[in-house]
Length: 134
Image (cartoon, rainbow, N blue to C red; front, side, top):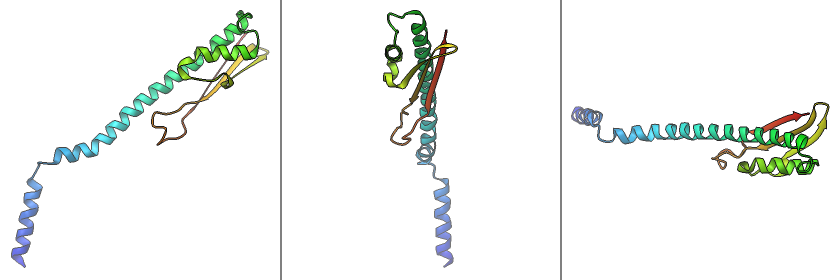
C-alpha cells in the first residue's frame, strides 16, 4: 500500500513539473476572451459608425426638405432622399418619418442594428435619430 502511494506521489510530482502543454492550456483559456474583446471592439465601432451615418442622413433630409423643394417636396421623396444618404446601412425609406412641426420639417429614423454575431445575439440595439430644420 505504501509503495503504491509513493508511486502515485512520484507520478503527481512528475506531472506537476511537466510544462510541455501549458502554453496550449493557457491559450485555450485566454483565446476566447481575447476574441470576445476584439469582436466587441469591432461591434462598438460599427454601432458608432451606423449612428453617425443615420444622424447625417436625417440632417441632410431635413435640410433638403427645407431648401430643395424640387428634390424633397413631399414626405415620401424626403424619406427616399434620407435612405439614399444612409446607403451604407441599407435602410429602407419606411424607416424614416417626415412631419411638419412648429420647429420646421422634422425627420426621424428608427433602425434596428444587426450585430456581427447575429446568430448568437439575435437582437441588436435600436438606433434612433431626429432632426428638425426650419
